[in-house]
Image 1 (cartoon, rainbow, N blue to C red):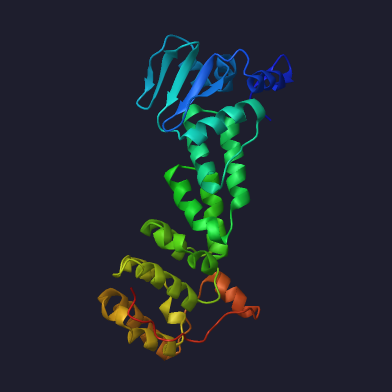
Image 2 (cartoon, one colour):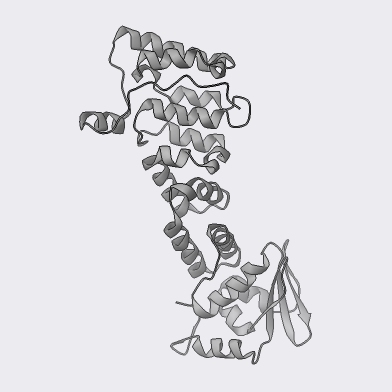
Length: 292
């Protein structure tokens, strides 16, 4: 529903006036688009932020927002808002419906909703993002949600990535995740994968994606001692490991334990999958190449 209600009714009458271009006395302008005509009263009723901006004389609101008098209208500038965001915001205030093209625009509208304090827009943007959450979009949405402090989307993305780790880690966006985000995933007891070897190879792909070897400290969260000795031996012979003394030391420690036959503690969900006869690969992969 639209956030505005007058005299016990939704804003359909105001929408009729908007569509007819009647009694327009305000315009919302994004940083890179034309002004979007609207009604000052409607915008001022949409949130405390708009009311504060529009009640009083033209002035600077904050570092990126200001109000100025324009011929026949009050013009409110949101410098950090793209043109499509201003148009979508105005339309939402009147209709309660979002018209956007993809998760990127929804994330931008979420950010804008926090600035202008339209709680219903924030909730609608979050709902739309959650509906788009998939293996392909998860890593990209997680990065954006962390930047914009979108807690609900962030937590859902983390849960999706933990439950579908290999599929999410296979995307290009996974390679762009910050080190602390990958660390949070790798060390979680809730991480689900076919095997610890699969988790290690996903991490290795992220570590070598920039041409060197980054985030070596993250490998301490890999349970090398649960892997077959043959798998560990193959990776010890790889060019990637030869470039990382820290990674080599972890592999050698894991191999030493594995060769003794001592029972190492697997991740809970991998152990449960093994006990249930799930599809858990225990075959070593081919030795990795030299990386990029």
